[in-house]
Length: 150
Image (cartoon, rainbow, N blue to C red):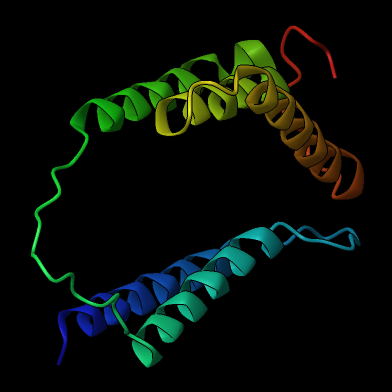
């Protein structure tokens, strides 16, 4: 069996374990259109479906004519790990919108083209605000407001 199929089976097993863990979340006794299990179940099902898709179509890109080894960009990996740690540390203080804007904008600068500061900032603001509105207004999930007070 190809290595990628073993990876796919591992992903499927992780997704199944995730769905099982989500099933242990207690449902509230009040009526709500979306319960506390909805998002974890959706994520777990997405993981399982991704693993199934990878298992069914494990195709890899064609091998280049001359084999090349690509080294990992350890600086970017380290910066992103630090950025995620910073996100965790400032999440309650800056609130969801402020900390998520910081994460998305800085992550785009670390991993992408650094010449688009304004474009990446606008996208970070729009994406963070949209996700906040969906979770807080549509789903009724309280997210930290932080300094901004949204």
